[in-house]
Image (cartoon, rainbow, N blue to C red; front, side, top):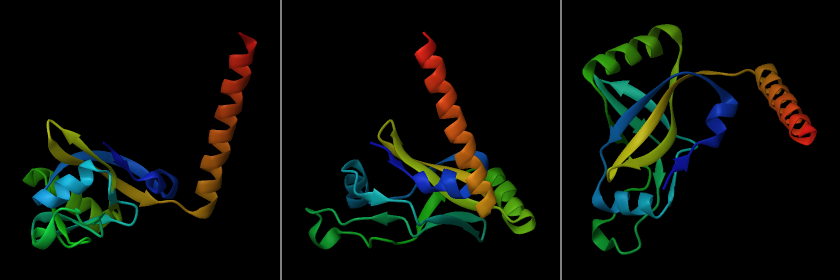
Length: 146
């Protein structure tokens, strides 16, 4: 099961990608396995040498009763100290943002693909849409030739 952030590639230039672990509770894992999570409005911060993911929505697990989690709580990202330091420098000095691109499982562990991103302006978005349409038309023409 994958949870994608489709808006990120439209709104941001993605410079680098990092695979991070995610600290979750049992009910959160079960909700993610059911596909009941959303990372569209979430972003990452670095505070006191630790990376965190804010505003990631994971709905309540229906059989969770009193052990259920808070839906949009701050979740810790698991990265190496050198990676956190490098990300912190880029965020503070160069104006980048940490945006989650995808949540997925690797050997029953939840992972987050986090992108180091810069925001696109409106004309950049239009340019990207133009390029995508041209590429699609070329593929269609090439497909019809054979």
